Length: 425
Ligand SMILES: *Cc1c(COP(=O)(O)O)cnc(C)c1O
Image (tube, rainbow, N blue to C red; front, side):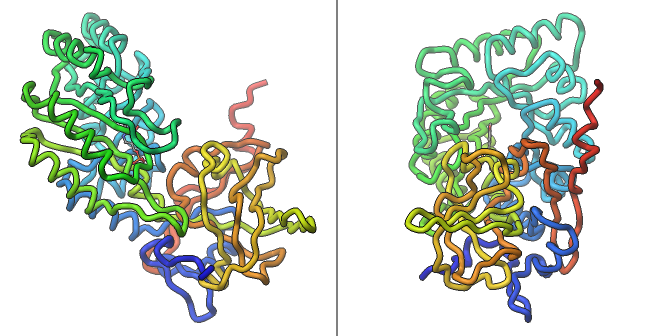
């Protein structure tokens, strides 16, 4: 079997009478014609389904969408409408979420090096929680309190539990050698708790941990809960946040737990360990990754006999840097024949001026793939648009939310003038 597995496509994926893939009742053929390529197409119902699944598993306001996975005003509103909170890690993410009309009381501020300006905004806008990451940040909060910046914020302390998540080292965050959080093993975590509890500048309401991203092994989460529960229980704080990091299947050989299964693992672990705190989680990738596909046009096919075939599309590392950064794998297909056998192998590359600009190291495509074809890569809804760049002065692609036959443009394509908007010379 070389056809694209159906499970890698968004929930509402279907095939129209002309054989083309449809998402949210909209034909990819029409969307490519109307909005041009490259284009991100999100299945809005799929996003809502995942938000609802997270809320059903953990409770309203106890599933916090990690906005760095994919953020724009429309996305922030959906997460809020679906009764999630929003996790932001910078002033820019907070600004976007507030601009969307999400109340600050639904926002949680993260970051291992928050600036005085970011902390000031978080305090004066009254975000729900600031997740404090270091002793230097506690110093900054003391200094703000001393000059009268208030009200006194409710904080969580980010704890590094010393659990190794089996994921790429750049996105593993729970081990001892980490820039994030207060180490449990060397006593920093306890020192931070004592300092925060004695401090008039913060209200310590709970603890936080995040062991890493794209974690497939449910056992890693169980282990983190065990370590955190042991530390948290005697403190009796009301909140415990167990982070995000649930993996998703990007390629046909991968299987990931569902949000519902993740919920069972965490809830069972908390119950058996006697956790009485209110438990929250922060899923990002598992909410949006498989909601979207990136739609490109195939422009150049270069066959090098005995070596390989290069398929070049009109985007690349500027709309999806994950293959270059982490060696991440994806699938490819032709939306005009979504479940055709993919009998040809080659390397799917972008249009940037470097050989490292690879989208799929080993792409499979139908044998009749030709120049001018619309080509798509599924499961590109997380950390693609948000990690994208303007490298080579490429204008970043638009984002369309498709739902019930309606295609809503939520981010327009950048223009060449947008590229010059910050030039002052
Ligand atoms: C990135 C991040 C998340 C989300 O991780 P995913 O792998 O996208 O689910 C949650 N919490 C924190 C603190 C993060 O940094």
